[in-house]
Length: 189
Image (cartoon, rainbow, N blue to C red; front, side):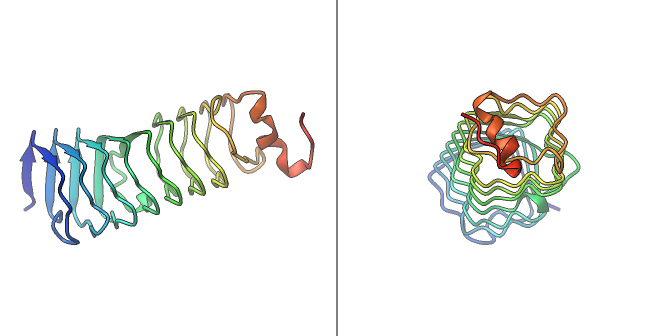
C-alpha cells in the first residue's frame, strides 16, 4: 500500500532513484526540487504544484498525474506516454520540455504557456482544445495527432502536415501558415 502525503510543502530536495516510489501526494507543493535521478514506480500526484523543479531524464513510468501544474520546470527528455492514462491532467508554464514524449496520450485542454517544446513527440496524441501560448514547437512531431480546436495562434517554428494531422477549427496566425504549407514547398512572405 502506498504511503500517503497530504498538503505538504517540499523545498530544495534532491531525490534519489527510488525515493519517490510507492507514494501518493495530494495538494502538495514542490519548490526547487530535483527529480532527475528518479525512476518513479507507482507514484500518484493529485492537485500538486511543481515550481522550479528538474525532471530532466527522469523515468516516470507508472506515474499518475491528476491536475498537476508545472511552473518554471526543466523537463527534458521525459516520456509522459508511460504515465497512467486514466486521469492525465497537466499544465505547463515557462517550462522546458525539449525532446519529451506525449505519444498516444489524451491531453485535451492542456495549457502550455511560454514553453520550449523543441522536438517533442505528439504523435497520435489527442490535442483537442490544447492551448500552445507563445511556445517554440521547432521539430515537434504531430503526425496522426488530433489537434481539433487547438490554439497555435501565438506559437512558432511548428510544421504540421494537415494531411496527417486532424486540425479542424484549430487556430493559427497568418505568420504560422508557412508551418502548414511546408510540404508543398510554397513560399509565404
